[in-house]
Length: 565
Image (cartoon, rainbow, N blue to C red; front, side, top):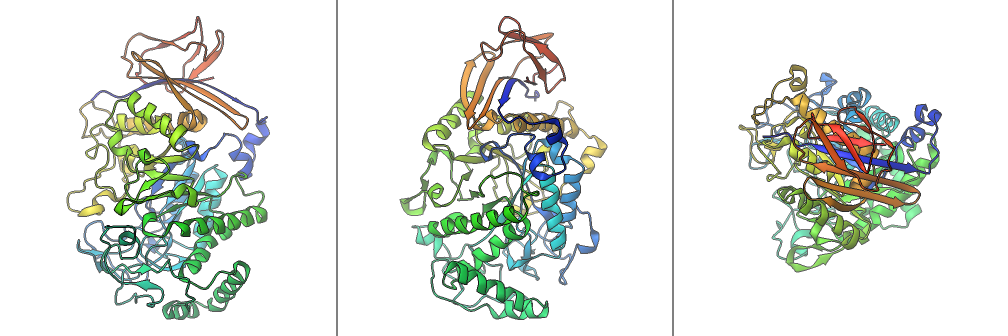
């Protein structure tokens, strides 16, 4: 397979007056101001903390957990310190990542359970036991604080994965929550909205009564746990203050909102990725957004030197099977339509991208730009090629890893890199079952050994692929027009397009050419986008060139070139 490549010319004109001293400042806000940031153009790196990097082997098995799970269904040792280490060494900076989405760090059920595919533990973070504490397998509260602070020092936002739909499964060590908190049936039948909301996702996964306004007492297991940990009085005092401030009834959803927004108030989380959105009443999300925004404002007021910007709190929705073609109105089960954008969300995860990516560049790019500009009216989507629970990713065998990167990183909208996309991590591990196949450990040795990628025949290495992602990511990070700008095709052969952005004092324009042949020279017509005599730099090869007669000429060693003024 031929390596997909790109020529990009771009001019960024910002009326921000950024000085060299601001570029070198150690404050998070000043570091962030060095580059423009828009959530609509964000490059989000999504990782399962347990599967990314193990920096502390002492916490690999906490709470009496054992290494007795089915393949890829137990804890493997990744931790918060491991993520922080990769932030510190610049791994995400080199990828152009400006937001990290991490799976829920909250304390998970302690025991393993057989969910039909063998014994499983809550390594993924979606089986909560206690929403108020960091799971000891991942580290400590201080480890989490250090991760967030370190990310902010690198200009990277943190998206926290939150769950308000269900608890963890019931086990001998993890009792069911009280009946006024959760339902244990019936299973969802998806015949209508209630068939997706007032039900359990799967057997033995209790569903929170998020529709209830009935006041409930704290679950006995939490009271006992908090007393053993010596923090019962503190937690109750905070709950009393929260309910007094808000006037909310002590109903299940409002406890959950308090516990989730505490992560913002205490650590400075920048946004939520919300799990199982269609399985909770849409009005609940609007309430969550309001409380999250209050908590975010309070944190920024208390930590003016740590905040990255004055941006509002951000939320993106995982409404299963939402495609960008749905626009503002998600097709709910039973035929109803729901506008989640009107209920607290700034973005939605685009489940359609993995199939749309089989289209040619212009078909997909122009469609997406039109949807964003017209149907979505300024809101955005989060595109992905693979994910933790999508069994039908784009290019599951990693036969087209370079093309996958190019399509994802240059598509209108924001981009989600799933950990390991950048090194063609396996998505079909042979001895695992179901979604566990998608959740193998990140194999850092592939980069150290500089091995060739076995799924392709061109002899390129994992390091080559990583560098491809890095160059696309750095280009995207530097130029907000890539994901947030208006799209216009300039030429069909060679395929050339421009993206332009002009809003709120930010002005950016890029010109991109794709699938160029390798030859002695490339000659790209840039029209009036760049003026004659202007110098632009190729981010891919390092060349600098001068625009002459409305064109640029570049050495044709690569079929990918990234240029910017």
